[in-house]
Length: 410
Image 1 (cartoon, one colour):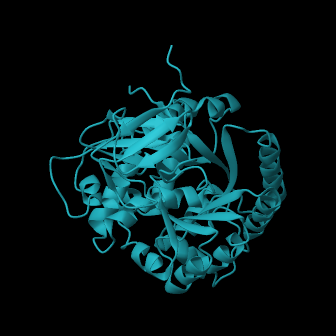
Image 2 (spheres, one colour; image 1 turned 90 degrees about the vertical axis):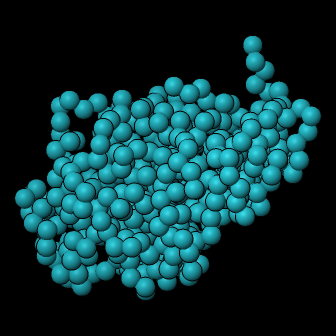
Image 3 (cartoon, rainbow, N blue to C red; image 1 turned 180 degrees about the vertical axis):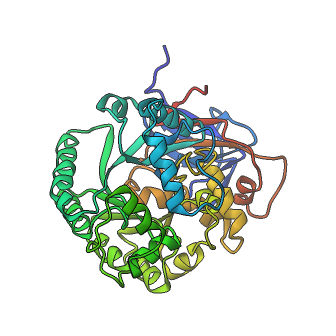
């Protein structure tokens, strides 16, 4: 039987600690669940992984695993968000769905893709057993909806029950997610942030995702209002005319950590606000979902230039062909050539770890941190910046290590 406490060492063409420069022929030594050494040169006992990049396990800061059974994205490319949401609602109501099986499939796919940490938006299908059995570092954000003011008390009670039931969680971390401005009353957002403050929990909220959302906030009109009226949940007094995403950012800024998901249509004042509060607020960009809806160019470079923090997510298979965080990073590298490749790598590793409050344990390869690793094959090429070798290829990860244990590939 393999002694899981025995130390072992791995060497590769390049080791990317993220906390420092790439190490050609570097070596990582693991004992038990943790990294005990990161060295610039291999030793005689190192296992040579060959022409690969050895990275920290990737961090997917935002996803909805309940849709991992979708064989292709819902709707059509370029579809307005309110129309696409109708597709989501119809899918959720389908009797043929098995959310628990979809979540399990999404967890397995994530591991195969080199992802070892996930920020999951949970709406159903989760059980304590499935959470405990997952070989991933999970933050589970309990999602709340409720635009009518009279539902706020009930939804707050639901959230409080989730927090209470999560108190003894050891293998995962709880969080709270007021869904979006068009689906959650502002007073409920305030109440949920206060609950998160009381229990030191992170908060995630979809914000400034589409032009239709901005129209609803500022003018109280447009396709979102029409959709909400058809669903029978429109509350005319819920959102004062002239509201902007900034008002929601100011509420979220009170949380111990806030993940602002998408942010496709944040203006310069709102980006500056995020930058000022970067210690606790992260914008989570979902590149290929953004592309699927045909949004305008994401303000990622502007926010980073201001000193703001950005992490990456896959969103879900309802708007994305797969759950590969590596593919998201490659999409960013192609779409934003002004970003240094080392910055792109940070988006998918330490930035996500910081967003989820897990940077003390994951996100870089350093002694004392958990041995979460992704092994990425490289082409037989050279580059002045070794990071470019990761992003110029389409090769998928060949191995994932979680807490020192190599995950068997399906």
